Image 1 (cartoon, each protein chain N blue to C red):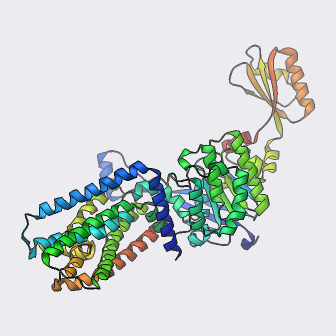
Image 2: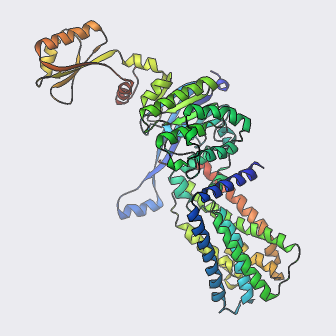
Image 3: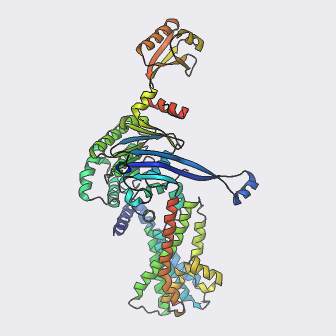
Length: 340
Length: 261
């Protein structure tokens, strides 16, 4: 793989933070004055991955997995401790001012817009900051404003917008210079389903229309399912999965869950006796009358189990569920690795 | 050129923001004027009791004070960065700054502008004219030009020192307590340096060169020839200190750790 052909090329990237722990007591405080106990923490511990132009990649991980730190290195905010990072053919930190002209950034919790002035004034200022010509602005932004449906918001100050309205404006602001690469950090956090859908549709459209590469961090796996074919998963500063979301599902979704609600409390022994001869993994539910059976995805097996159980025990409710991506991801984190 | 145009854009934006709150603007404008008037009277009353200070007479000291107010006003308008550590580093606003294609220090300066402080310059100039008239100072055609150069030099000295102090935030979670202290030390530049002992005079000239904000450049306009050497060093010291500050800042930005670590 040639690094020149990649939109993002990351090789063995690492970021260490030095932190010190203080000793206890007054005596400890005095000793801290002279010698401190330093601890080196690797927030990002040698990660490597590539992103091709036009790809939409989901970048996921728990809090503290190293997502933000690595994104900050990719956007030129932080200097890497070691390793190689080339984004859009440039070294983000070394050529920061030149580099950031070619990326768009949306940090869900941080506003790019000026709080007190009308949205269009913010856009106008950003247009100058990114040196966008009037023609480019008109042809490109008209479409963005239209698709995001923010025309009625343009003359309002940002402080008067709702979160959903503001987020749509933030997205538009990040696209003023029509960057080939877009970093989105939690763009749908705290938004309702309608706005989420609007944003997802918009991102898809931008990607198709301009071949914009998108790296998306989110806790909402539905964002990823809706947009990304590929996910990169981080845990404790390392990449633990990098591949298609379908593969991830296929590896984990071999089974189904049958949720039973019985009329009385049931012991595990009774259930195992009933399901003798079939492989079922019985997990207790929240109450003693609730049980979940994990079985393989096979109609006959599922029917057989339900028939046997219903024959012997009075039930109130039965539910057959596929395992969601969210559960898969949770399982992965519990096991700490992706099984091969 | 780009930076000049961005400067204009931000000033435009600043004025628009201010105009959003019309009543605030009027109240603030009036209170600024009042503050400056009180300041002016206060200075005249306080210095009314001084006669001679280490060979400087009362009007000369008032003149120095007036001069000092002009670069200081410029500094307060554009280097309002005493809370840089809390505002930009602790709260992580620096992240946003660093994702924009303009030099980070320039952006911080533009965002934190307080143009109202420029009123102080009017007070300063009024004081200089008052003291100048008392001293029968004459103006040459090039004096206004030299005045502008000296004022910019002085503002750069002040700005440079405070940018360096703000940069400490990149290395350590320094509490901002050092800032008020430095504002105090800065005030020493308002008085003739020869009233201090040698060590302090040395510090105010070469280490924290606040003397270049007040007494040295004023000496030129007062015709104190024995200080001319220092007076003409003002723009040079200003530029050197400010370049040094930008260097320290740039080094600091490389060390920036981001918020929440």
